Structure formats: C-alpha cells, structure tokens
Length: 203
Image 1: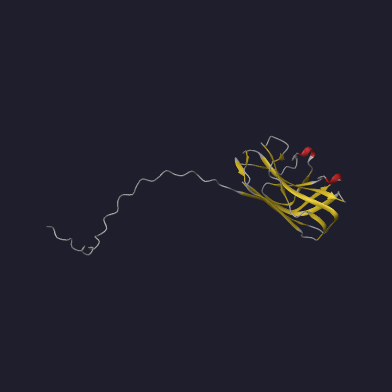
Image 2: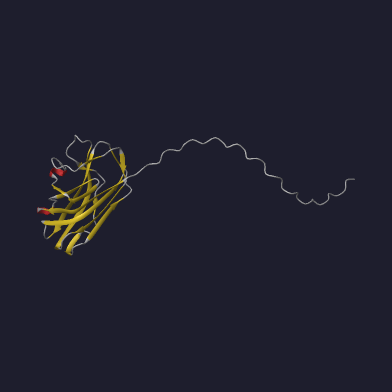
C-alpha cells in the first residue's frame, strides 16, 4: 500500500527575471479637449445715468477686451446699440461658447441716494457679422451687480457680479462689446453714477 504523503518541502529560490517583452502598439489618440480664453475689459471712468421713470439713460460701452481711460458713452434706442461712427466693438475671430462672466466696479465720487436705489447691469452685446448693425443684447449674459447702490455712499464703494454655468454659442466674424447701464427706483429717479469698472468673459 502507498504510504502517507510526506510534508511539503521548502519553496525554492526565485529564478532570474526573464527579458521584457516587446512594447505593444500605441492606442488611438483621444478627442481634443475644449480650449477656453478669458477676455478682460476695463475703464477708469464710466458714467451711467437714469432718466424719468428710473429708466436707463446714458450707458457706458467697453470693448470686449482691453483697457480704456473713459468708456464710450451712448444710449440704447429700441434696446439696440449702434456703434458708428465711434465704434469700439471688436471682431470675434472664431466660433465658440460663452461659459462665464464676472465683473467688478467701484464708485468714483460720494453719492447721496436717500430713498433711492440704483441697479447696475453689465451685458454682452453682439452682431452676427461686421456688416450687421446695430448690436443687440445676448440673452443670458446679463450680470447684475450686488449690492445695489442706495443711501449715502463714499468714494470707492464696490459691487460685483458673476454668472457661471453658461453654454451660449457665438459665431466667428461677428462684433461684440460690453454695455454697462443702470436703472433707478425710489424717490429720485434722475441720477448720475460715475464708476470704474472691469468685466471678464470666458469663452
């Protein structure tokens, strides 16, 4: 009869590592990720007004990108912006998507707004091509500054705004500019608001 199995012997030493195999084929290139660019515009001086009824009067216009000492002054008849002959609108070089907007401003002089409130908004205005006029507001790009301006305000009072999570397409070859405007409510509806302002948009 076969006897009982004896105990297992000690494990032997590990042998030498064999040669490395050939490198496998390179996999397919993945899709190109989306690129983004942030355009920044600013003005040392920008003056907006409100008129009877608290409606927006004079507006401040900034280029899409770049710094100006004083913002271009205009109005919005019919809600559209005609830039000629003092155009500062800039051409959009490629198709893209607007994803975020952020802005900041501060007052340039002491203000007395007792019983009145001024609300300031920055919005992107565009035309589909350089031959098209005027520029019209881009839906979804209105950025309302907070807090609103009310009461007695010292020089350097600040407000800011931001809009994120946007996905607004725009075409190449068009023109774009920033419009900063204010509306009023309360006792005094005719006001002047001088500020320094900076606006950025990520595309």
